[in-house]
Structure formats: structure tokens, C-alpha cells
Image (tube, rainbow, N blue to C red; front, side, top):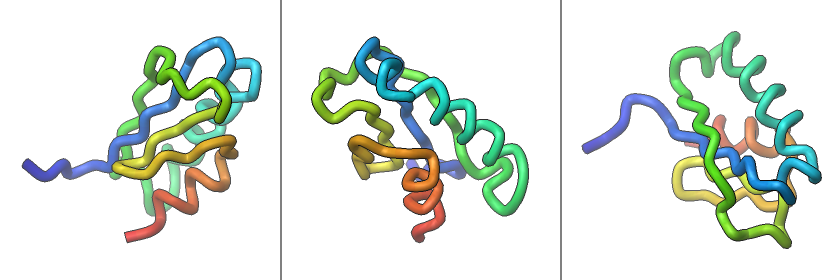
Length: 80
């Protein structure tokens, strides 16, 4: 079954929070409410993904974004 929206999983574990995951989630939420990605992305907050040494971690589809920023995640979302 193909999803009509891309799924983005943001880790909310303690190490990711310390590394800025909360700010990344906030920036992504704001960016996804406007522009060409509006309505095409589902942002999902998860519990710890057990990848603490790579914090903050965001999964975009099948791609793991490690030690990431909101800009890197948005660039990954724009890829076909």
C-alpha cells in the first residue's frame, strides 16, 4: 500500500532532545504548514530509537538522517 504522504519520524528520546530535536521538530512543523510540502508530509514524534550516539535522529521514508538539522531533513523531503 502506497502512502499519499511522506512519513517523517522524529526521535524524542532524551539524548535527541539534548541535541536539539525539539527545535528541529518545531522548525519542520512550521515549514510543512506552507509551500509545496503542505499536506504532503506527516510528522510523527517517536520514543527513543536507540541511536543515541547519532542524535538527533529523524527518519524520512527509508532514509535515516543522523546528527541532522531541519535543513537537511527538508532537503531529503524534496528528493523524489
